[in-house]
Structure formats: C-alpha cells, structure tokens
Amino acid sequence: MENEYILIINIQSEAKNVFEKALSEEKYNVLENTDLPILLAKKTADKNINLQLEEKVLKLVINIAKEYIGEKSICIDLTKEVKSIMKKAEEYGEVDKERLGNYASWGIKQAIKDAIINSNEKEN
Image (tube, rainbow, N blue to C red; front, top):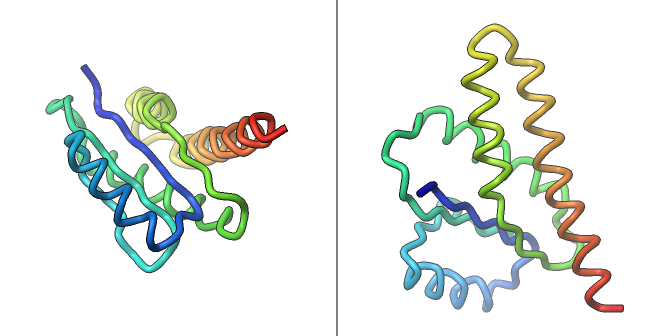
C-alpha cells in the first residue's frame, strides 16, 4: 500500500472546513493550512518513505498550485505523480537535481492541467 495525496485548488473558505472534516474521517492529514485557497492532504500507508524528499516534493506542489489560483476549483489525486517523482529522485540521487526539478515540475503541472481539462469536459 502507498501514500495517497489529494490537492484542491481554489477552494472556497466555507467548503475548506467541510473538505478538511471529510478528509480527516478518511484518515487524511491536512498538510497545507494557510489563507490560500489551496488544500493539500495526505493519507499515510508507507512507513518506508524518505520524509525529507516527500516534504520537498509537497512544497513544490504547493508552489506550483499557487500559479493556478483564480482558475476554477479543481480536486486532483496526485498519488501517482508524487510516487513517480520520488522514484525518479532515488534514481537520479544527488547528481542531477536540475533534471529532477524539471521532471517534477512538469509532472505536477501536467496533472493540474489535465484536471482542469477534464472538469471543463464534464461541464459541457
């Protein structure tokens, strides 16, 4: 079993509390609780995870999500992307941080863009 990550961008403040409660009932921990309309939550299953690397990846997720504030509200399951980034980080090691950063940024942005496109298709 692996960790699960959920990102919600442009969440209204009233809805944020409702989502936080619902996520906590499903054993998610809210990781980003700021005044920004962003909610990042994690469900832990894998205890053998590099916590420092995970923290860096999740900070990158938040920084990229800030670019999409003002768009429509979207909910994204980032489990696959975070797992892929952490696997690549282990492959690259300390040797090629720039390459890893580019890969990570691209993967997260692509997941957000795909979620926006999918939500637009559902509306039409």
